[in-house]
Length: 244
Ligand SMILES: CC(C)(COP(=O)(O)OP(=O)(O)OC[C@H]1O[C@@H](n2cnc3c(N)ncnc32)[C@H](O)[C@@H]1OP(=O)(O)O)[C@@H](O)C(=O)NCCC(=O)NCCS
Ligand SMILES: [Zn+2]
Image (cartoon, rainbow, N blue to C red; front, side, top):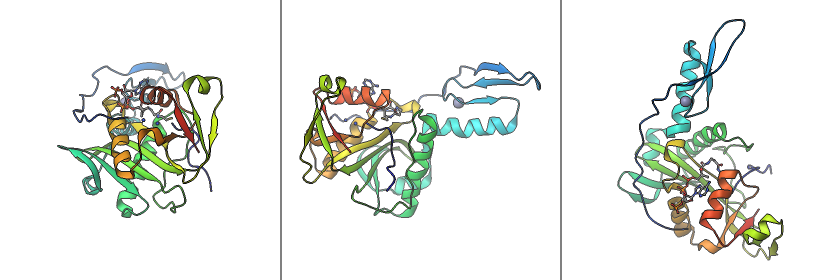
């Protein structure tokens, strides 16, 4: 079966749910170039990175839609119905897996498509009708009310290596006997307005509790993006399990 993710990465534990949505940036989009034939001015939004012609209504509409998803996440009423595995006030970590209702799997699919548009590396987004297989995917979605703001997919993986960061840097690792496999971070993403507010940390805490594993048994699917590697190094300073 096609491996869904080409680039992935990982996470430890404290509880903080204080994230509030900041006001959208008031900075005006920076000009990028002028079309020599039409004279139209193309601009790049500093918040979401989208380039568009401001004078074209269709472009403005596309930008608004893209901007809202990438910066603030996905707003859907069904989100509040998804099974919660951890919550504090209006903020929750919710779980979608193969046993979830289709409407909830669709939310995960929509969120993964927003994420796919935001990241520079290539990966295939989650599909709501994907059959369950031996990876038994578990998608932990951070939510603020009816907004999904973060996405973390864990999959059961059976090829496992252990390495310190020194070993990782020199491309050395020790293959471990797989036994039952480990839960491995396949992909993590947080909408831009909510980064560095603990959504992945608390999602991993919720996952460890719900799936009953300890942090030293958490795997990461490599290669990492630069954000993913920074996160993994910060959360697992002594080293990681690479699990594929
Ligand atoms: C990687 C990503 C998901 C991290 O999200 P986040 O919102 O920063 O995650 P958290 O706030 O839960 O971070 C947990 C801890 O890791 C730290 N951390 C997060 N990203 C880091 C980075 N790039 N470098 C160093 N530390 C980092 C946070 O500061 C936080 O530390 P603390 O709990 O001790 O205060 C986010 O940057 C992102 O969506 N990036 C784009 C998508 C991407 O590249 N995903 C990885 C695919 S391999
Ligand atoms: Zn924008």
